[in-house]
Amino acid sequence: MNKIHGINRLLKLFSSAVIDQALLSGASLCVGLILIRRSTDLQYGYYILAINALLLLTSLQSAFFAPSMVNRLTHLNPAGRADVVGGLYRAQRHMLIPACVGAVLVTAVLWCGGVLDRHTGPLVLAVIGAALLTLNREYFRMVLLAYHRPADVLRSDAVFVALLIPAAFLATWLSAPSLGAILGLTLSALVGGLLLAGFLRRHEPWNIAGSQGILRQIAPFALWSTAGAAVHWTFSQGYSYLVAATLDVQALASIAATRLLMMPVNLLSTGLGTMMLPLATTWLAAHGAQAVLRRLSFFAAAVAGIALCYFGGLWLFRDWIFATILKKSFAHRDQLLLLWFSAFLVMVIRDQLIYLLVVHSRFRALTAITAVSALASLMASYWAMRHIGEIGAPLGVLLGEIISVGGILALSLRESSGPLAIPG
Image 1: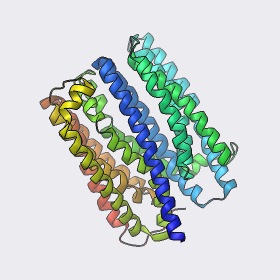
Image 2: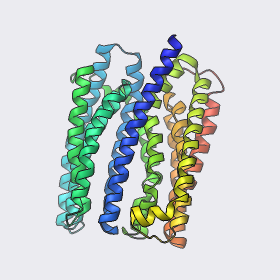
Image 3: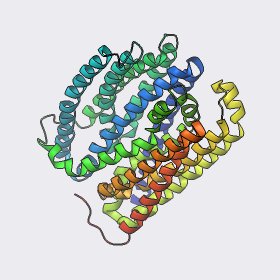
């Protein structure tokens, strides 16, 4: 009976997480489609650069806080959990507010110096505001998911999406749709963050004065995981800045638009990933490293199978999608799609397999693997774009993902071959 109850609880957790990520996936897809259809390639390119900057910041936040926080919450009583959550939240605020003030001052100097203009200056300022509120929202999402409360996250994200999509549509009536879309994201993040904070306060209030000096405690592991996240971003998303510098911002539109069609698969994998860290930590304590690797491999195979089915359908209907939905005609469309298909197939496998190494805090090894992958990816992308144009960008990403998943798999097999200490 207990086993059946555990399976039902696991299915409920995953279904909520998948529904939530399906909601976010649909919203991101809608916003992208709205901007592709109703704005210029230049404005869409600016939006992609802004969103990728926000993605970097949220990735760094998750990598720095999540592993150590989940490990602690798994083994603490309610008072201890309240101290950890409150202490980390206090530390984040103390870092973010001065950082945002400094970023605004730097932006003002660059604007006055002519580096930024009347289009890019306001956009950068909007991104700074969006970053502050997005990181606040993502922190509470991370905590509630660590508490295994995806239903609360889903309710908040539904409101977030209900605000975000109309805001993006209204933004296309402005002279700068990219700026309007980022301002809409800022408002949505503000409301979503307030809702999440309310859900967490009702479930288990945090102690804002708790866990003094917690940053010093988690920094030895957190800095390595954060460095790994930053390096990984350089080849998974940083290619967009390489495209803008090597070709131009408008060239980014065709690359980003074809990549946008992969978003449902990416966010399905991400949705599972939000629950995999707490679950992998629990599995490790109960069953050991080999069982964790087997279960992660099963999830990787399942997500890869779903991805292949999605890719097959997308390929069959690609002409209709571009003519009717996107209303765009891109050169090298089919080549870009095939390369993104391949890159995302490898990516979703890597997204699941990585958690054995994460729960064992093997962040130095992960950073090394990611650094090699990123360097190879950026060099390949730059060389390919110089010689064959736009399709060189996803070609480099594919190479980086292959190197990354190969290194993670090899290290995971070695980690699971013998008994290992469970990190506290």
